[in-house]
Amino acid sequence: MTATAEAPVTSSEPDWAEPLRVEVIMGSVRQGRFGPVVTDWFVSKCAQRADLRVGVVDLAEGTADLAERIGRADAVVVVTPEYNHSYPGPLKTAIDGVGVEWRGKPVAFVSYGGLSGGLRAVEALRVVFAELHTVTVRDTVSFHLAHQRFTADGDAVDEAGTGAAATVLLDQLTWWARALRAARARAPYGG
Ligand SMILES: Cc1cc2nc3c(=O)[nH]c(=O)nc-3n(C[C@H](O)[C@H](O)[C@H](O)COP(=O)(O)O)c2cc1C
Image (cartoon, rainbow, N blue to C red; front, side, top):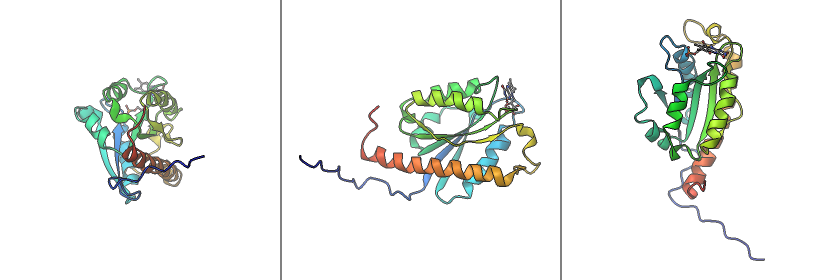
């Protein structure tokens, strides 16, 4: 039997430790929305990590450059509320407006809502993102009865618990982001 030679690592392959570009998509566009409170909190968690370069996509401000931003991103986090047991319509429209740029990218979810904490929206989004050839991260950060879960300063009431959940999410997301970045550099995604 002949041993198969490994594909050579090209010089363009990024270093594993190189900072990751993460786009955080704020999924709510509603007037009077609570989304910015949750998004700002999560972005502040990202800012504590030296390995991330974070941008925020506010769908209420337009989506003209969304495909280009997803194309450049190593990872995406969707911050979604739950409306009638699912995700917001404008969020779906924005996701659908991006095509091949999604392929081979990891996607994580921060959710919020009433009793469900937005988890039904997340599970519905996983089906959508599977179709787009992404990898969705298992663990989420979710806020049930979200309006009661933040102080006036924007801190989480349960900072220890939710902060730990954000750490787990980001550890999983960054592992996938590094692995997939290296894989995409080595060979185009075959889907
Ligand atoms: C039209 C509508 C439908 C909602 N449906 C649900 C729901 O099915 N489950 C839930 O847990 N919360 C539900 N909520 C509560 C929202 O998730 C909560 O108000 C959240 O803050 C909405 O996010 P936003 O303020 O950023 O738009 C609903 C809110 C609205 C406005």
